[in-house]
Picture 1 (cartoon, rainbow, N blue to C red):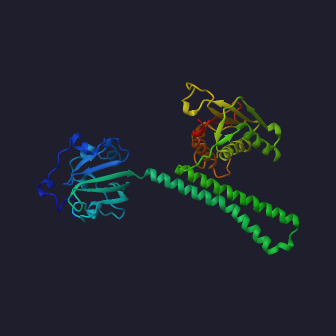
Picture 2 (cartoon, rainbow, N blue to C red):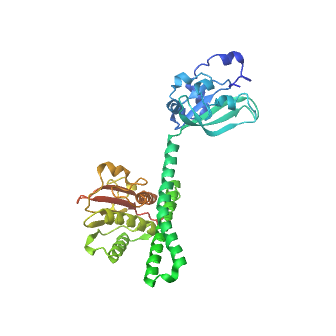
Picture 3 (cartoon, helix red, strand yellow):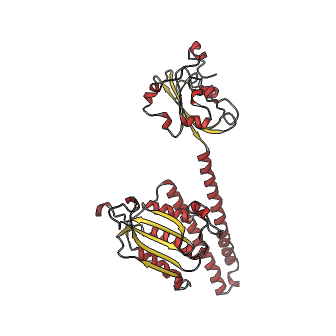
Length: 384
């Protein structure tokens, strides 16, 4: 049954309703053209009285052409099986207890998918329809999200397969042939298992971080942080692991403001940036720790120029190509050298921004990559 065929007056149904004046939509309380989603509203007779700019963009139908037309003609929708949606749902002649249609994928003419939901506004419960309010959303954003999730799952599966295969292989071998191996051979296999288990643990931690960043639930537990000392610990760890001491140059400009941040997460940021410089860069890795203007002060015009701490990590390698600069902090970016999940810098950016800070990438004076992040002092409210 078509829209309005059972309850709307026949003479008026057959006529094209006049286009509404702007004042007719005052009851909505907003300008429909300012809405990010498509909005289509039909009156009690099934004629379109509102067709906002987003609806015109999504459907490629000008608002002037849709206003006053019957809803099923202005918005001809089909389900994925080719059935006409308005005949299936029949808002005007269907069940009087129905108040809405949940969001679902439908097809516009030409086969383009759109997300559609509808609300039935009745004069009183189980009464006649006063308005049918239809919301339209483009599916492209959802498709991008789904593709990103699929890529993440594929990457994680690939990264997990190698260490887990190694762990399974070595443990099965040790259990089956323990007596046949020397102590040195057993130690080597157990060390390999331990390293692969650490790799799996790091990957799971990255996934948890991404989940918290994407959902806005990344918690920051602020404590006093000595940024210079934190950087020094990372350099000492690399030297202890065999890197030459003269590979690193740490420069600290005093006095630094008292910084309150999450020490574990700041260590994660430093670890990632310094590791990138060591692995992918060349020559001296320079780390500058300086006072700076808080990102929240709006730049050099701020009254207090020492309200933030800035850390710059640079190397003397080939650097990052100019065309790749805008993709460095996206998921799965790995640069010219493959390896790793490509999630580290995405997480770094999420951590810095969770602190209210900013991070940038550019070309160092020596020609290599230069990463610079700035954190506001973040003093807890109870200490102000």
